Length: 122
Figure 1 (tube, rainbow, N blue to C red):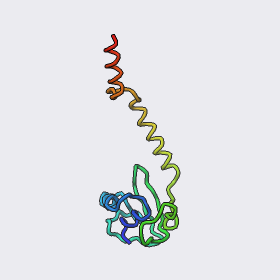
Figure 2: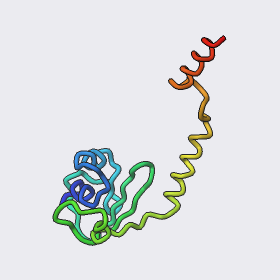
Figure 3: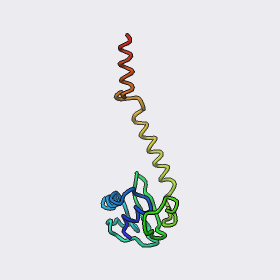
């Protein structure tokens, strides 16, 4: 099975074309080497894929014949992604809030209506 189809089947990407694009950009590696979307996947392959600033690490257990339901994904892969990767993403979310506080900058539509209403009353 092709790597792009496998990643689509085990629900890491919503469409196969998105999985193909990720392979072409070098975000997917098998056994440490970047791969083309047409590379075949076999059982016991180690896959690393970078998605949403997290590097997921997978081990292929078996190959599905078609796209599988979310509850059945664990049959076909073993996720060995460290917990620290998910914690780093949470910290990144908080760091973005630090740079721009909510309510600063340009007014929203609601703020604009409140400002206009305030000026009309006087």
